[in-house]
Image (cartoon, rainbow, N blue to C red; front, side, top):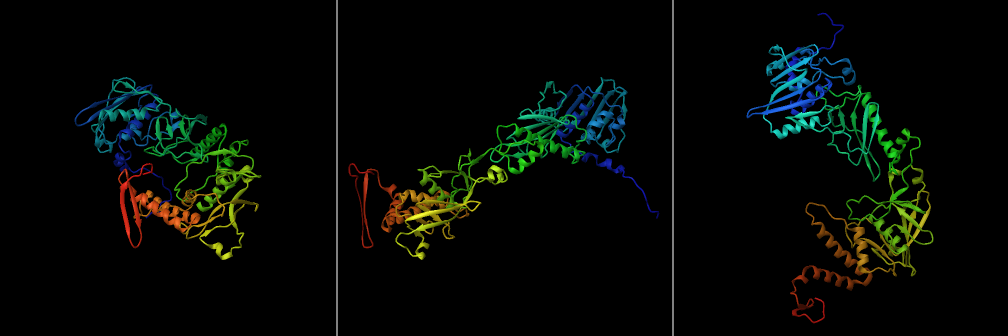
Length: 554
């Protein structure tokens, strides 16, 4: 056996037998490919007609372009007779006509060099039968007629309209002209660079929207998206004008071929987005995005000196609303709460210091507190803000309570001090009248929550109940758990009993529990206009229904 030292790649003759599987054979593919061929041929218009029958639909696509010079090229997979200028600009594959493979098709064409007509049956597409080349005495251009499965006229019209929407050549269907649309019609701004029209869109990104218009053929590609922090999302769509190096994956041309031209286009898209953001009144780019934007524009401004106002995270919160950003005030600081115990405690301390406002610290050294935005770390203005966390608490007992009693579930000190520390180890002490303390047993059970309340706290049972619920209640999502409302109602009852016990004593707590249970389960049974009198003990029970006494609430 002689050893081969050189060879060349070739296409096997048997490959033509598989030609019917190159394209999906859908009407979308067929119209896209035929319209593209007509456009490359310089057509001034494209006409589509359809005759519907019970067993088939006869569809005809005609154009007034340059026509086909050689029928051999038309039926040669991968070959074409496009002029050099077209080849340089678009790299046509010579495969689009085979989107019709397997369908009975008649092609009639006249060019400057001659005219012909072909009738192609199913077997002829795979090279199993000869195709007769017949004379044609029609006008210049190309007409392609083919049989397709029966189609509702409305569906067929929609297919033609979709393929024609962004094509540079006008198209009509059964005499109806379709209006052409600008692929970038709703763009916030359109920027032309290096043979592309790049449309920058505001808050319109969707994976279901086509992002590239390749001379009328639209497809989806994941071009860059830049999302500002809790603000605008910027995306792009690209209209190809003259970009010969940007080519599509063959044969179906449903995606962009990855090469240097695509990489350059992606870079142009990012540059276009940042150039648009730079012209906005302000932006909230992450520090990482801002560094990238600064590579395109040396004077790119920093993100606006704005942060979301701080407000507490509650135990029941499964998500948080998009925060409201505000300009930084003098004395601005960041507070990073670690959990709902911390957040509710800190929120109570702030409201107590300023008369009720959530995010502001009153007193001789006022501060405004804001939520942290980790994506802003790196901006000089952000890094300069003091960022506090809760590092401890102190309790003062004027009567000298022993240290071990300070570990009780309920604490009634004379004073409570919340200790905060920033990133530079600077301390900030807040005087307050309430704190709920971190403890592994506290979650989900109001009776186990460690509550500290000063002896002179101006809190009523309802206020204290709300604080306990906000800090501790978190619904169970187990499959056998009760509904959210039932869980919250039960927890609020238990929290109210605990609040009455802390503020008024055990008897008041028992009465509060009875009152709530009665209101939920019994009161609705008492007839309107009647009064229930109840006396109950372990020894005897006495119930009676009497007329309501005038002037008493029912």
